[in-house]
Length: 320
Image 1 (tube, rainbow, N blue to C red):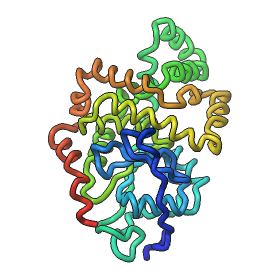
Image 2: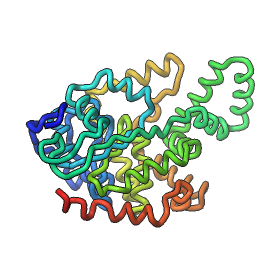
Image 3: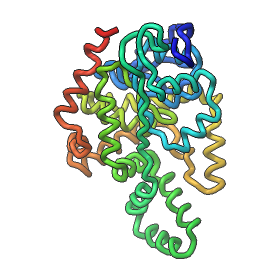
Image 4: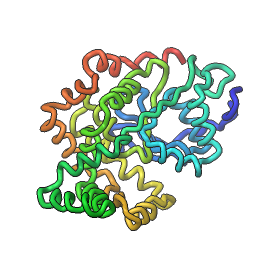
């Protein structure tokens, strides 16, 4: 067996959320991995979730043996990964190590079915924070822009806080659209290309909670797969209920409040995944680019990419 996880990881059936509650995408109740589910029924072997550092042995078994995930795309920034690693469970740490070290797949390995290697790709979508806040400032009202100009020359701390407050005021729609506008196109292209190709096995896209960055990437993938706007919005809004299942054990509200008190974005203002946030984001994309497909084209995702997206996952199970 490969080092790290052993072949004796207990295989436990996860509890499927009822179809009535989650009609758009199958969701599984994993103990330590929040918001784990498929991106869309239209896209076999493509999954999404929050961070994996708190995975249990049963979670790891489900990811490797039931979902047969062979590629992980991590959208978090370096500081988020370091913080999560500091409080990782033993199995969460070992699971990620197997992917990050490209452990082999096959008989006698931690991922025993299939061939090739596990892979982990770090593609931070919010790496250009300066560009992000430049975009936030560009969208301010004339009055707030004038206020920002004064603070910029007099007090860097007040200037920064003005930008942080603007993000909280603009909520998810500003977060998502400013991220799209300021993000590097090659990073978006890499994420979407990696997600499209599931020929080597299932792919998992994750960020911290699987809600914002992952939700935005998933929305673009769903659109390309032909899901309706209602289906995209429904899948996005599911995050709120799924994350609430573990809210009692989550200390992010306290962390958000502490960060805001010390000077920073009040992320508690952006908690949840209201349908209006994704609806407004999709509307903004159409106004800004003319169509969602034009945005995808600007990221290098056109006909050949779409063919790969729709073809992948349909026959890869034959290899297992």
